[in-house]
Length: 137
Image (cartoon, rainbow, N blue to C red; front, side, top):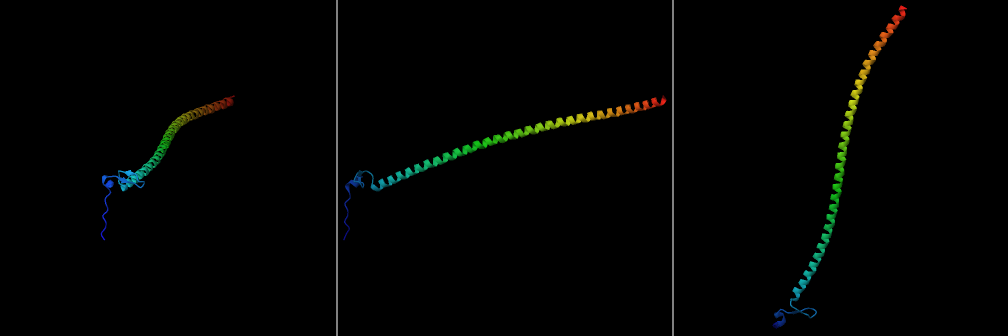
């Protein structure tokens, strides 16, 4: 037996097709199916891109927040460093003042020592004079 040659559909030759609902279509059924699949894949892709944008947006917000916190901590550290330098300078100035006071007190002590020695000498001379005066009477 020889296969029977099927007659070509005149509508298909003209580029018209019937779908599963028997509606007249211009596209071939498999092209129409692939177009629908591509449309669905595109919709999924757009949804995934939207989710990706939300995730990236959240990440950007988090990084911005961390950057602000880092900047705040940096400013606190700079302030603390400047305060420490200021305290160190104040201590150095105070130390210099105290050293000057010590030097002044040492000079005063030396003057008092010299004055004490002079007064002690005068006292001893006067005591000696008094003793001689009493012995002469």
